[in-house]
Length: 268
Picture 1: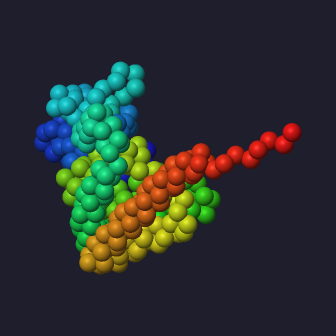
Picture 2 (picture 1 turned 180 degrees about the vertical axis):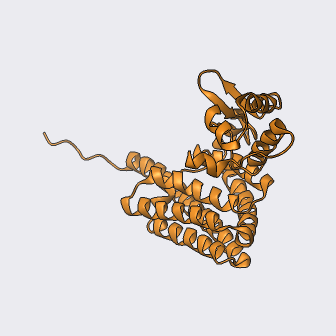
């Protein structure tokens, strides 16, 4: 119940149902309630908001009619899909077949995350900073344990927390769709990036630099730290891809060389 009280505010407006609608809409717009999130039970919501169950149902029905809620009988009410996918499945597959698209993706992220970090450094609340620190601590534990899967998960969460601290609704929703591509490892596999010697430690230092600048309310430093992080990822991936290309060429050369070498005569 304590979590529900932190999420919802008691209603004292003249239009009870519409006030409930406005409160939930505000949380959706701000990115607090994301698609797929299950709302608390009707009983908990009604008690916390201080409204009757019929008025609450009226509000939920209005949200459902507006396409913001999906009601699953026997399961509850869920935030409906909002932003959709950044790309269709066909386009994702096309990007996957053409590795150069990855660098366009990074170029986009560089600009948006620099902007987000700048805003976050100016607007982050005490709670925002605590959330950012939680994900930074999780990344440190992942690095110590060598847990690539957890590190990938927390990496996305960390960057999303920086964006959320910008308190820019459009940026939050657009980047949430972009980060879905990262979660699916559409463009690159972070586990591969970590195989480059020392990359894990360097990535953590860069995340720390972003977090410290945001928490210190230093917009210029935060923006530069975010840009430097993406620049490092781009440079590392280019080096790795070039090395892989050279290895492939060398392997082909070695295969042809083996055909040219004379075989040793068999001793009878």
